[in-house]
Image (tube, rainbow, N blue to C red):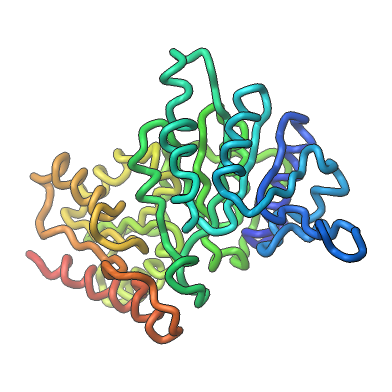
Amino acid sequence: MPVMNVRQAINETLHQEMERDENVIVLGEDVSGGAGTPSGEREAIGGIWGTTGGLLPKFGEKRVIDTPITESAIIGAAAGASLVGKRAVAELMFADFIGVCMDQLFNQIAKFRYMFGGKAKCPVVVRLIYGAGMNSAAQHSQALYNMLTAVPGLKVVTPTNAADAKGLLTTAIRDDDPVMFFEHKALYTKKCEVPEGEYLVPFGEAQLLRQGDDVSVVAIGRMAYFAEKAVDALAEQGIGCDLIEPRTLSPLDEDSIIDSVEKTGRLVVVDESPPRCSIASDLAGIVAGKAFSSLKAPIEMVTAPHTPIPFARELERAYLPGPDKISAAISKAAGYR
């Protein structure tokens, strides 16, 4: 299998799906690039993240649409196009700006199928670039997947590697429901082997990255990489962990998490977003409600603090959950006998 990074996997998937289905369109700020330059030539570099490179010369301006800097128009246009037969893939350059288009997301796109009695479908994919660790400050670094996971009618996806990015994005584009596809900006350069050709990863199936009998660790997005380091280090000390990466937050693979906790009796949840009303608190509540009798220790949550994300590099490192904080939480949970 070829080795590629997350950026390349997303780009390859967009090319393949646009070739497969002429109804797939891409729109967003600078998704092709070059509009308004003195030369008048379109660059087709794929925006600041490079994920849509090469689409414009292959598919043209009617399918690769540069938009004004207005998230409400991007998502509104994607919704309208998808209601009349297109499969719109809309890019929000930074997930932090979902507030500008929140009505289109949670009051319109999420509710079309329900409000029209199943007679309408809105197969929109919204690609949201998120996450801290790139020194992008408080307005461009937030992990806001918890906000959209809370909305009925939206599917929420958080890939962590190139293979899953390809498989999950393919599934998302072909899904008849709206999918919020969160891409962590700090993971774009992460490489792994990626299956060639058509490849789909089903929603609602978590992956088990490590196996152990002592503690269940659930890590979301980029936190899975930090959790791997902590789990591997603790394995050398005799503490074995199940490490679960959900991949999709809605639908959520509750069974895999509950089964693991019933085996280990301990749970540590690692989440980049702040603790209040977070995915970490949601998972803790689910496990407390459905597997309470199996718990041998209090549930531990390793999250960012309830504060805006600092710009200073040293403060941003302190803000993010890291391997040391995760190791401490796992050791604490494992210490209860």
